[in-house]
Length: 128
Image (tube, rainbow, N blue to C red; front, side):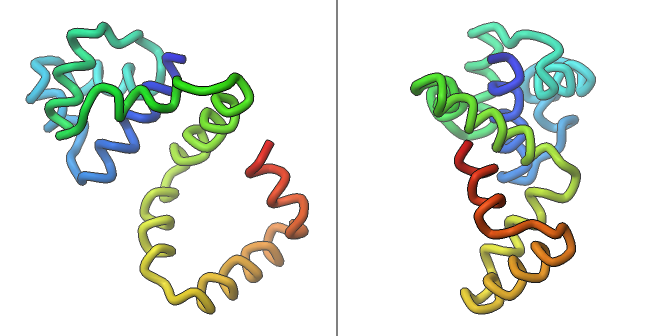
């Protein structure tokens, strides 16, 4: 759960475009502490989570949504959040969202060719 919550903080922080240093300053901690929270190395206390949510301009429950669901759903969310921590993943997704649907389809086909991945196996990894 610490990993999932940390990943949710990282995704929100990067989505709104603030650095770990800025978030740390707003919460009164070091940027290294923010790194530890985001990596799941340190547990986030509730009072600190409230500070983080305020700094990220969201509600605490928005960050905790990943923890609220059936176990299978949580496992899928954790997998997705882990993948989103891959360097460049958020930037790639932002660019993908701006593409026209036919360009998206072409890009997915190209990436599948590069990774030798069939559409069925790609879907099963996302759903599992």
